[in-house]
Image (cartoon, rainbow, N blue to C red; front, side, top):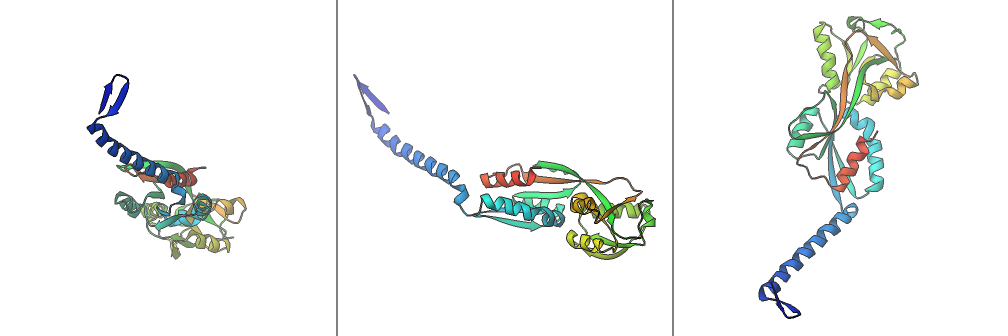
Length: 244
């Protein structure tokens, strides 16, 4: 591509042709670099799948914190069950999954965070004393159930079936905030993840009920597909939801 005669160097005909392609490559590279640097100013969407209990408790703060740095990034929050969200992330219908369940070992999914979350019976019913109860001893109290599909609801049903106990369920609702508000009025008992009642337990607005069943621990988990390209915005959102 070069001719060198004495101390002079000049492009050959092939060299002249190559310059055209080289300049085109440089222009493409510079556009790509500019796009990366300007990512925060580009209108994009991050699709996040989560379960109802995590969505209502954690996501208001996540959304507020993230939007301070990425005001032009739209967060699309999809509520589902662990199973439906897992299917969606495999079909590239969501970018990030945040759920609470047993530990997930799923081919092609990368677990970015695992945090243990104990599940407790809680109440403010004055008739429920600070003592250990058998499961059948609390079965006649009004029970507030989370919706089917929640992993800890499944664990409760498994224990009930094992001991042949039926609950006196008075409501089934997907919004834990509704359940805790009813509980704090002194009505009923519920089986909930600790993160959702910690502040109320610490302030004695709710009490943990000691029930004689094996301890149950679920895991809050953040997952992405191993083949997913993570933009800077996605990486920063992952940092927002995984930092302690």
